[in-house]
Length: 271
Image (cartoon, rainbow, N blue to C red):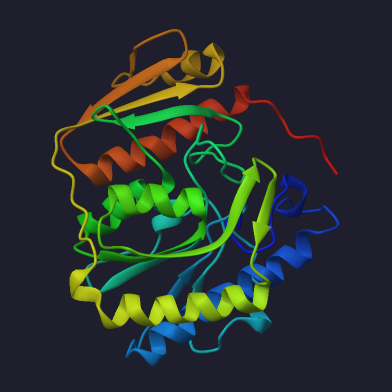
């Protein structure tokens, strides 16, 4: 949701805040635009996975009636739920840049209240690279990403050949110059058409194992909790490390460690 046109502030993406419902409508409209572009290019089956916050954000009665929808949190593979080898491409709509990125709207990597840095085999990761690698482990190409300029720049650098649609340019972490939502949808539909029509040239991102996952948490208490798992090593005051030969296992451990660390996180004030 952070990568949608017109969205710049935390209060716009939090359930219970006055602007949240409007943001759900923007999220639904941009997703519909991506669906329309893919279908126009020949896609016949489209599954949409709600991947923001509690993962119950789409206005279902306004979502394209031809899609299947995965909704709700605590699901296998989280943002990657539903992926399997029967799919041709994955689209990432409304994405944001990785934690610590300059001039990026609400930058974070998976855990906004928990993760200070996240690396695999020494390389910093974004949600785009993590989810592209998960898709690649199923043989699925990552064809499209939409979001702010920083997000697209990151994705293009790590996933050469991906179709990127810029809908806004950050002026700071919570300020941007944005396209009008209607124009953003036009560009997303056109980008989705190109992404699907030219899918053979899109990245099949399959990093080679073995994989060393390192997470720098926001505080040392989070690392204290995570090293209760026997396979997890302490690599610093607030850093933990995990090793595996398989990317899907690496991804699942990331999700498990997020669950372990969250009780020690700063809690957002209730609206």
